[in-house]
Amino acid sequence: MTSGPLLAFKAGKSHRRESTNFIDAVSTKGAISLHNDNEDGLLHFKWRNRETGETEEDLILFPQDASFSKVSQAPGGRTYVLKFSSSNQKHFFWLQDASPTRDEEFVNNVNALLEDPERTLTWNAASASSSGAQASTSQQGASSSSSSNLPQLSADQLARLHELVTNMASEPAPTQPTVSLRDVLTAETLSPLFTNHADLIPALFPHLPPDLPMPPSAEVLQQIIASPQFQAAVRNFDQALHTGLLGGLVRGLGLPEEAGTGVEPFLRAVQDQARREGGDGDGSGTNDQDQMETD
Image 1 (cartoon, rainbow, N blue to C red):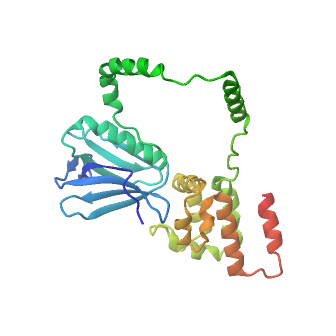
Image 2: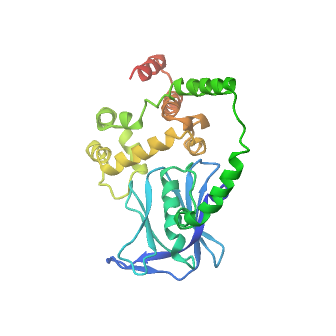
Image 3: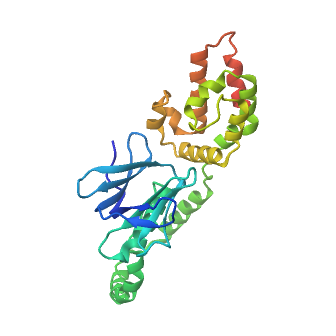
């Protein structure tokens, strides 16, 4: 189930002319909205047709994988592109609010959510500076009248406050995650799997791009795992796992929901699933567990 929108604003679609850099706006009235999905725990970027009420685009976004930026060469100055670091996807939109005064505000908040879906959005940043001088006189009057009503702290209360602040400052910082998928899914660790277990290769190919050469080979897979696209995908999935919010997504992989709470739970769940499907055989499962903990 998708929650209410974190951000929404009027925007239409645009399309790039084939084999050119020209961007043409489509006149259909639309709206962009960003939501946190309660089931997969991920950010969804949606485009809704305001004339039909239908949601025609629903894109799932991983943190720090996408950006929303202005297309400077497009006429009108209100065309933007949603593009991804892990792929060549590009989606073009043009802002349809009657006034362009809030365009920058909307765009900044979109990029804030693309960076961190939990980010607190900021509003009226541009207008605050222009209205600050006008509001300062009334604020000064209010502050002078209210300052006399502030409670005065006793010496004991000040000492207690100082003790609380000191204790807070001395608390250790939270431990940063030490396991990363980028340390596990490397060419050095994956290549021996392809060369020593040739039966894995046909099983992997249905999940890879359809334009790869046939028959499948270990060399082709090694080229894939060394590619920037694969490394970017691993990085994005690693970052998403570190949010601890992928319980809904990993259920679709046949893994328990707790596997989506971090990289270590995910790796252990994959290992457990492989052990169940392959059987412990001669009882080597304990050794596998020990090996994972020491790698």
